[in-house]
Amino acid sequence: MSVSTAKARLARGAETAGRSPEELREIVSHWGAELELAPAEVIIEWAAATFGERFCVTSSMGDAVLSHLASKVVPGIDVVFLDTGYHFAETVGTADAVKHTLPVNLLTITPVQSVAEQDAEYGKDLYKRDPDLCCQLRKVKPLQESLSGYDAWATGLRRAETQNRVIAPVIGWDAKKGKVKVSPLARWTDEQVERYIADNGVLVNPLVYDGYPSIGCWPCTRRVAPGEDPRSGRWAGTNKTECGIHS
Image 1 (tube, rainbow, N blue to C red):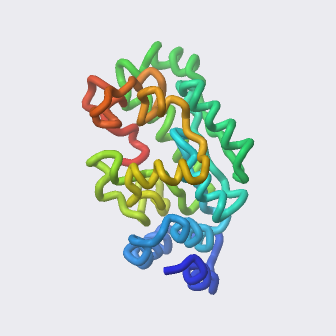
Image 2: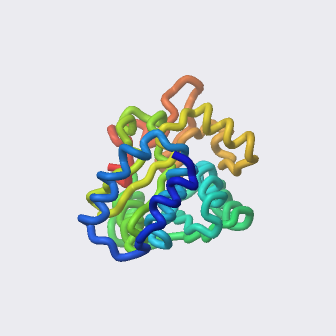
Image 3: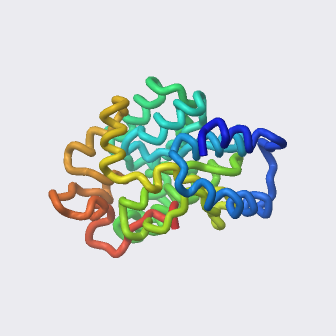
């Protein structure tokens, strides 16, 4: 299905706001299978045509592939970046670079509590004692609140990143958030990502080239040795594999 076809099919009577959960689930049911093999650009344009201003992109700033791709299809699109207060300086720097070099509306979201305020209430270094709660307070809850004005959100989730993500649909229903979850890059391989970066001069977090193929908060991320699982540096030494945003 071409970009023009996707746009035309959604243009007739497309609403831009206020859909009920039932309506959103119906959209997922109808379009999920049809868009499963569509190019990432088509998926993004479909989402923008379907949801209008109630569609955004989220980015953890490991790279700017999804932001770059979305900005080509929908210049000025909202890109939500969650600043947990525990990010590496390089991650914050990548977000700043995206803001100033791409035609996107970068929205930086922060948790209700600063790190110091969280320490005062829960004790210092909560991430060591209860990483799930720390992620809930600094990632999951703030993101959920920031998405309240949207019906659909796009993520850079890829099935190749981890076994837990193999079944991630291109168009899915996020029951916890009550949103349509769009994963335009779900089928992309590592090679496709690298090729897109090289061909388009896409911004990449410098830490990626310093042994951090998967980048989270600095207290819970370590370098990964060659040949190791790219996500093995996240919450190393624990059974934790996801922050909770995608579960």
